[in-house]
Image 1 (cartoon, rainbow, N blue to C red):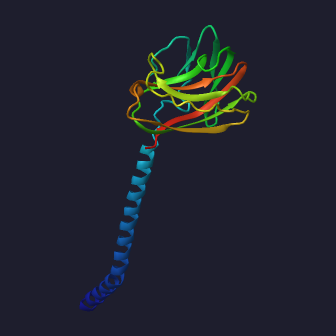
Image 2: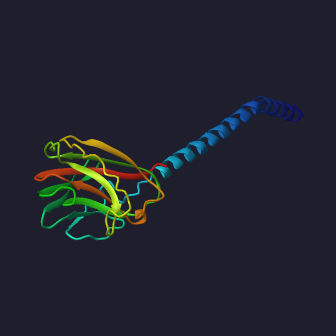
Image 3: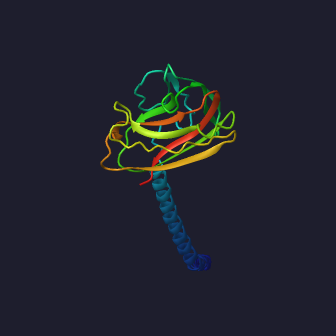
Length: 219
């Protein structure tokens, strides 16, 4: 019995002596991995926070905008507006750049810019922003007209003291393209806490396809 006990004790001692450094190394490596995992999670979390889309349903997966002819508060959802005398649009679901998308058929557009657009009301604050979206059309849009994005106050006077960051007109083709625009809201600009994000549709007799619309605060 003593021999068996001694032999067993020796084996356990040998295993523990040889395994201890390996065990410590494993623990150290696990700790480093955990630290790395936490750091990566923090980085990804901060990135996701910094890139939060301020627009609801930017991919139109949860429905398409209803069409209206009067100004309405859209806080938290899209609407499609047209000026009854000079504009005319229809909206429908389509295959988007990614999943579902929005198809806007422009039937009439006598005076560009204010006649037809999709929009969403939201509250902003001073800072730097980036707008991105994907778009294509049923035919190559003309050079002089197409679509563009803007931010303005959502109540009259619609331009007021808030300098609207008009974008250059986007030349839309029959292939999906990503469009990007950056702009800055300064501390002296008013109306940003009750703002309106618009994509204007400035060409008649054409179908526009829009998807993955984002508005993010980058600084």
